Length: 125
Image 1 (cartoon, rainbow, N blue to C red):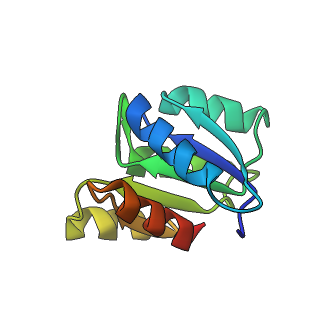
Image 2 (cartoon, helix red, strand yellow; image 1 turned 90 degrees about the vertical axis):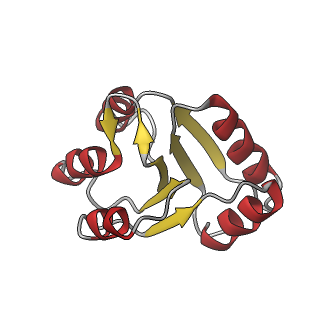
Image 3 (spheres, rainbow, N blue to C red; image 1 turned 45 degrees about the vertical axis):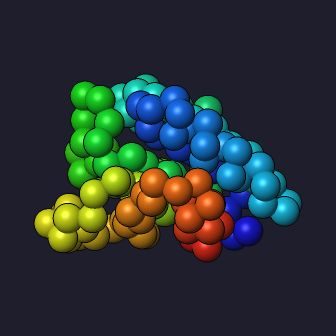
């Protein structure tokens, strides 16, 4: 596993639990932190309460979409180098282009099957 500290920003508790369960099955398990609120997540990161090696970010989160979150994150010098992996149930090309121009590491379409999602996450972490 190349990322030891994972910060997951997603407003869906079930998705957070699923990702947490998947990460727990990876050897040399990483530290997992989550936030259901993107504004709160940015505050946590800005205050260095969590210093993640990677951020898993749901594209559609309350109060702020992924491009807005990424733009704010990248504008803070001490946060701008954190890799971001976007997770979404959609794989619309416009979305992918929009986030890729912001410096997102990967865009992953969430499969509906747990085993597929597990394999996908393990491949990118």
